[in-house]
Image: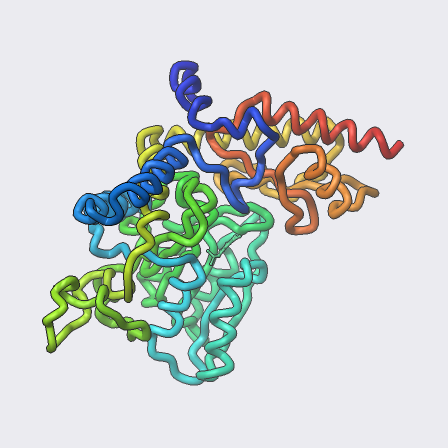
Amino acid sequence: MPLSPKNLKTITEQFPVNDQCFYLNHAAVAPWPRCTSDAVQKFAEENCQTGAQGYLTWLKKEQDLRTKLAKLVGSKNQDCVALVKNTSEALSFVAYGLDWQAGDIILISDDEFPSNRIVWESLAQKHGVIVKQVHISVQDPETEILAAINASIDKPKLISVSAVQYASGIKLDLAKLGNACKENKVLFCVDAIQAVGAMEFKCDEWNIDFAMADGHKWMLGPEGLGFFFVKQQHIKNLNLYQYGWHMIEGAGDFSIKNWQPADNARRFECGSPNMLAGYALEASTDLLLNVGLDNVADTIEYNHSFLVDQLQLLGAEILSPLESKVRAGIVTFRFSGVDSAWLYQQLMSNDVVCANRGGGVRFSPHFHTTKACMEGAIIVLSKILHSRL
Ligand SMILES: Cc1ncc(COP(=O)(O)O)c(C=O)c1O
């Protein structure tokens, strides 16, 4: 169900981007809402006028951000959430924080974004672990992963999958996978960047051990600040390899000689936080929570269906799943006899902001994306296709 007209008006004001271009690229980098831009401008002016005189207020904002991120990822405990640079950094905290033995198996899918493959492959080179890839099919995405988790021999020590595949847009049933991992004592690591901010996410309920995402996609924030969720029981077990004043118990008391790493996930934050990005991400997450993640997800689903219908009318082959249970905000498509790389270039030069991924063109509307934006993009697409004839 799309948002009601009253909400829509406020939302339209929050997203002037929809008056400038046809923005269908949230799976890459999202535009900022007005409130995020305002927060950054206000913070910039404050820095210019009074420097860090209001540092205590900044710390309060940082706390607010942690609280909101914990809500966004479905964790009751904000002590489980660290602020990190990006998804890759947090994946590295897990990969290099766990103890490995030669022969340990790590399971990923065969179409992961490079960040969720390279870090595990680096372990294979260093520690002799085995990285196995399984196929995630549109029809039955979890089957091969579940088979590997339930196997009696060669059980993985850890699986690391994207909640939503970046190219195809296949959404995994994380509750099902989390359950199976728990039962089989397999660690469950989720690259959540294509999901958090676009749908309800439930780290606690889904038995997720580790989850991470940068803020610049569905969370509508800037690049370079994201979250790292670590289940409470693992916080003290991950080996640390970054150290500094900020990650110790009692941070801020520079006289402490016998320091200990903080008891909570702040131990993964070695130095000064990125306050500027924090102000931005706090504003973006606040907006998302106010709209409500159920509303966000419903509206994205509506937008997804709208685009699929329109694309199919133009004769597109849809490469993303169509079934509600399996689909997310990503619609990847191609046309027979049309080079997708060329089509992508043509769209981009006609103000349709999209991506070239997974063997096709990828559209990724968010909840604020207007019908006019989607219709406009479809008209542009149709003109490009006709111009070839
Ligand atoms: C699934 C997935 N993981 C990670 C990233 C980005 O990683 P990072 O936040 O480290 O830049 C992307 C970006 O496209 C992605 O799609």
